[in-house]
Length: 102
Image (cartoon, rainbow, N blue to C red; front, side, top):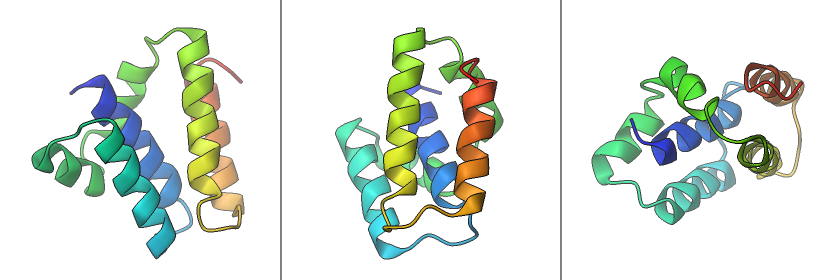
């Protein structure tokens, strides 16, 4: 799994944390995957959340600055629909801790 796929998997995990993905959240994910150059197959993998556990491990090897930038992106993702749910907040907090930042 590439670093880009791992990043998008974490973004997707935040977006589905509240049990649904609104159209503007889907668009945010699509823009993120496109910006990171994911292939069609990789995008499918992200949409299905395949490899999420591996994604955390891959991202955890990044520098602290890169991890903080990803957490910022996760917060942007959570706010893509204009509201921050408790489930999204909990997911971001757990990922922040898993990445060694919390």
